[in-house]
Image (cartoon, rainbow, N blue to C red; front, side, top):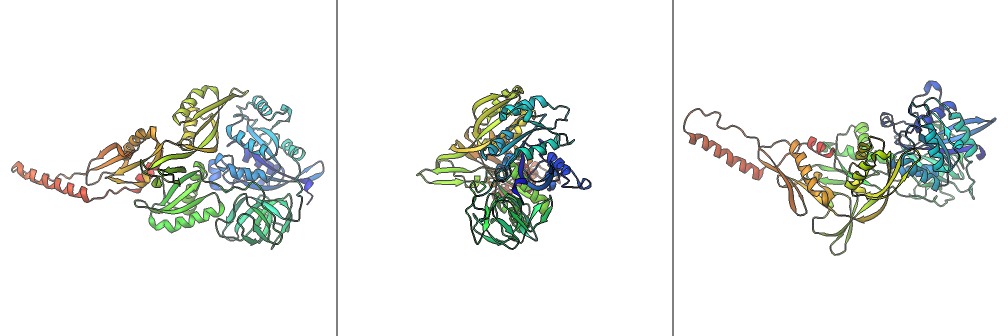
Length: 596
């Protein structure tokens, strides 16, 4: 079709600023979805997305819009707003020419808004600014409009006002998409097929289905194609568009967005950012591809070891639709066989574990999340360590390096004192601050990723009463002053409870974890000690008393020596049991210990 009438765009915004609701109104006004079939969050197909009210997986849709007697094709990609999925968002933005920047009229510009906007500007996208939720009782339309105009250095009249709930201003926004966003650019050599993969999903019957934007060439059913990075070939079993349900078409060409059914049922081949080309006339991959790098690591074990094969199958299945998930098998003497999994962040970890539970009915034990460290041993040898179990003992290392993150916090000035105290507690280096026109401030800082993952986001929401917003970007590796904290139960280390902590907080953490375990661990038939060990010594200790049977209850009368004889016999038995017995830690204790 004529590229001059194609508009490819995305909606970028902070979490809960109304992306999905605005997309609903667009689908309704363009008659893409019939009114009788309309429902909230049409493009959020996962049950988990609907429950939480957030977009987890991006979703493309094709709409037809008539303006001034001409019919235009709109290809919209609804993207996630959470920082964990920033790489997927960057690939989606690479697939379009423009973006609608949506800002909530009740909240104003947030930290994640700035991060995603910077990403869009770097890719050279046309930005269409819009203030959403203008019908809300607490909307600050004039203030937020001024703030957005200053941010983009434009006239306030160029900022559109919309409401996804009532549909106010959505027609004007659609008109602006036609007038402001350019049509797809022409490739120098259109004969060579180049299609960017910005997402994919897995079907039991069709295999992997890749979502692509065509930058050159065209493709038809039965064409032999190749993944540039994975270097694997396949046949296009089906091609089509999203309306929003898949609709098969005869061909797709330069400038269009659609899907290709590959028939591949092996994990690890398709990945976001890869390029598809023809096998006969291969073209080079599109620039900017990166392999998704895990930020957080956690071990996942089935509650019953009988479910281990099912857990492996479930992880393989999830990886078919999520290339950023990585895992490898590991074994623990206490928990049995499981998998060490890499995630993009804490939300990604939470979503994957929740999907394992819901979609595969698995009851799981998840260890305390940790990050990757680079360890330099005495003698100069370096090693990457991503689990406390492999972290070297005290005295074996010369230096330890950890990733740091640059963070941005936007908050009302009233909460600055609490935020600065929180940053100090989390070992942050505080940088510059900036005041916005609507009486809000932005604070910049650098902090260890370890501390960022230590409930920093929850603490920030608590300190700012929910008004603070956070964005972060991993920047560099710096030397760390951290040690491994082990927990001993009955003089034996329990690997699942080991963690990496800051040296200056190790005493506090040792006392905290020992106290928590003392409160929830069931008593045994013998006395046992719970100890926190680090820096080559015991830092905290608590004793759990043994169950004790009243062996003298059956005696009636007689000499005291009869009671003493039975008590002494019991004492010897307890001592013998203590030397031979093993502590049985129930699975629910592990679950309670993993929760903050």
